Amino acid sequence: MLQNVIIGQYYPAESPLHKMDSRSKLIAAFVYLFIVFLANNWLTYGILTVFTVFTITASKVPMRFLYKGLKPILILVVFTMLLHIFLTKEGDLLYKAGWLEIYEGGVKQGIFIAMRLLLLVMMTSLLTLTTTPIDITDGLEHLLGPLKKWKLPVHEFALMMSISLRFIPTLLQETEKIMKAQMARGADFTTGSLKERAKAFVPLLVPLFVSSFKRAEELALAMEARGYRGGEGRTRLRALEWNKRDSIAIVLLALLTIFLILLRS
Image (cartoon, rainbow, N blue to C red; front, side, top):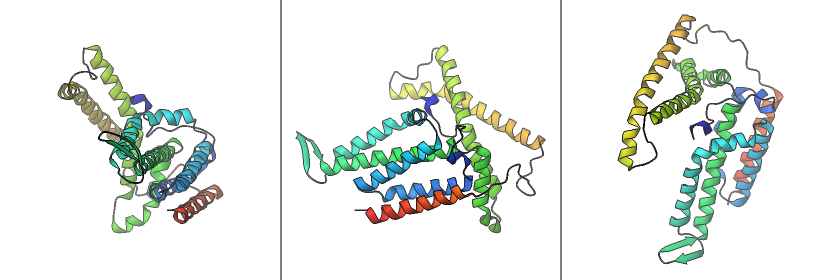
């Protein structure tokens, strides 16, 4: 399952999304997080789904690669959907067997919530899949630039976010390596009671924390050895450039927002 986590990974490809400015992609992802909650009927969710599929196709990221990243959250999505189906008592009664009652509103609400979660994960994953950590750092620093007037450490915050995203795959690989080593020594992470499983994870967490702190110290020493002193006076190898495709993407997102507002129930 750890191999299926795609958050923080970058998928190299020659696509319009890869060539977009990181600032436009950050703005689009942030706006999408809000407008996805505007959908509340079949038509609006259909429009969101078409827009998402179109964006994924334009990114040239294989659908099977995205599906691999959705596997770890499918259990949460199915559980949330079933929770709404069995507990929401709205609309016409569709099925009844003893204490079990399924209503039309519960089925519709469960499907909508599941679609919302899937759309959010797919679109937010595209941000890291089509943008390198360096570009994310530069984009965040530019967007948060006005906050420098209040003496906020914008560069350090952007760098911290970028490093966190970059090291998610690394920590997952480290976790899998430690799990295999512990399983070779007789550890069992899949059977037993909840208390026994929690105890089995202790030998996993201790070396993982030690390895994480060691990796953080090595990174800090490497940055210091290369003369890193924060964002003041720092130059960049590549300058961010807002192109026509970035403006078109923002306009399309604005049109999508207007359609969702007008077509809401």
